[in-house]
Every structure is written in structure tokens, then in C-alpha cells.
Amino acid sequence: MKEHFNYLVVGTGLFGSVFSYEASRRGKKCLVIDKRDHIAGNIYTREVRGIHVHEYGAHIFHTSNREIWDYMSRFAEFNHFINSPMAIYKGEIYNLPFNMNTFSKLWGIKTPDEAREKIREQIDGLPIGEIRNLEEQALSLAGTDVYEKLIKGYTEKQWGRDCRELPAFIIKRLPLRFTYDNNYFSDPYQGIPVGGYTAIIEKMLEGTEVRLSTDYREFEKSQKTAAERGEDFISYDKVLYTGMIDEYFDYCLGNLEYRSLQFEVEDMPECDNYQGNAVINYTEREIPYTRIIEHKHFEFGKGEGTIITREYPRSWKKGDEPYYPVNDEKNNKLFSDYMELASREENVLFGGRLGQYRYYDMDKVVEAALQMVEKEL
Image (cartoon, rainbow, N blue to C red; front, top):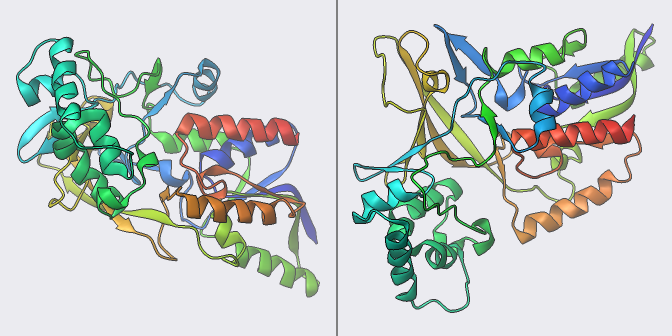
């Protein structure tokens, strides 16, 4: 017997789940598979003593698009969490993004004019001509103090290279804000879903068949073998692939580069409040992790005890989880070559941050998935 689906969706992350939900609403039958043993991809949250732990790093939903905000609000109520991270450099605490609180702590000044003048003095004193690397770009935008204390070490940890070896385009601009406002995002809509992100994906996939711990290639091979043997098998018209595009093509043109992360979770049932803020960055190069997340502060201190996660940037190799595409000239050219191969795959769609080799904010993931649905259906 053959069971037939309109779409095989590879990946239960936000892109695949939005597409499956919308396709199902339009009468299409979807089968969703994921190699992990849980749904929701990198926005997966698990509950521990009333605390929703962001298993793969902090995710704050924010958008300037009212339609996307209203769309996501169908699946969850959002709290009014405002992202206001802090940074620690050699024991000193600074506000992020770089604002008047930051400048006042750095220089003891009070007014925006004083801050602008201080930055201008530092930039004017630098022997920088044509911008050749990230260090010169950051110095030309923010001056020496902001760069040395709050950008340099963090960036070198994040990318695993000296700032003088990194291309300038990584920092196209810096958010220098001359107000006493610690809100990291300027988007009017932002928050954390009450009940965690996993609950959103559960609602999107409700009524859709989902198979976890299922690798795409192995699944495809098993169905082909079953059909050849005259056994029960599954068929489908099209595939939506949200995994790594180079992996789909068996790295035939070479592998794209990524940066990976290692998460060190510490459960502290006897501690009520570890650091007093949801996110604190550690900007010294000598400290191996880039930030500590205290999950309960995303929901205003709710839950018993506390749980923290330290994030360690890592170089990526095959088999590791890819988190950040390295969108330099070499990799973008290679991705373009893979897209040429993808254009010849008549019944395969590529979506999400890995399928499209770009770092998406969550609202842009939702928007791209909805656009694909409209184009397809």
C-alpha cells in the first residue's frame, strides 16, 4: 500500500512549521520529519520547574511588521519582555546597545553632545585611511574605548579570528544611541511567548503527521527500498528542505562555512537569581564564553530556582550543528553555485536559514515561509 502526501517537509523549525500549517489550511497533506528527537528546531524550549529553558540560545521575538506580529499572536500570547542585555568587561558592567548609560559609565559624561564629542575626538585621532578590515571599520564608527572594551574581544570569540583578519562588512553600522534607553531593539512589537516556543510549534503542527529522529536521506532510501520490494511505502509530490543546502547535494561543490555553538547548562535549584538579567555578554577575549543567559528573566523571574546557559562559540566541522553562516565573498559565491543546482530540482523547495544560507531573525523566517506558501499555492 502507498500513502501519499502533497509535501514532505524536512525540519520542524519555524520555517517548516509555518509552511506546513498554511499548506494544511489550504487542503494539502503534509508529512513533517526531523532528525532531532523533538520539534521546534532551534527555538525549542523545555519547561523545568516553571522556567522555559531556551535550549539553543536566547530567542526574543521582535518585529516592525504588524501583520507578522498578529500572525504569531494566533498561536501564543506574548509577554512584554524588552531585551536589555548587559556587558561585563574586566568586572565593569555596561549597558547594551551602546547608549548614554554606556557612555556615562565609560567617560563620566551626562549629555549627548558630550558623548558625540568624545567619540569624535577618538575617531579623529586614529590613523585610518581606506577601511581594510573589521577593526578599522569598528574604530571608525565608535572610537577606541567602545571598540576595545565592548566589541573587540566579543567579536573575536564569536568568529574565532582576530578582528584585523575579519572583513569590514560584518559591521556595516553600529547602534550608537544618544538616549538613556536600554531597549536593544527598535521594533514596536517584541516579547516572549507565554508557555514557550515549543507550544507555538505544537499548535502549528496539530493534526499533521510528524516523525522525529528521522534523517531525510535515510527516510528517502527506506521508502524507495520498500516500494521496490512491494512493501508499504510513502510517496510525496514535493519536498520542502530546510536543512543545509550543501549537505542536500552531498557537498559536491565543497562545504559552506558556518560557526557553531556549545551550550553549557547549569541548573541551580537553590539559587533564586544568579545574575539579575536575562542576558549578560562577556566581552573579554580571555573569557571563553560570549554570554550567560538566565532563562527565568525572560518571564520576569517566574519559576523555582534558576537555570543558566553559557554560550561558547566554536568552529564548525561536518556533523556539528551549524548556527551562523559565514557570509563572506567566498561562501556567498559557493552558495550561488548551489542555488544553481537547486534551480534544477523541479520538486524540491529550499527554505530557512540553512536552506537559504542566511541568518534570519524569527519574524523574517515567518515572512519568508508565508511568501513561499503564497508562491506555491
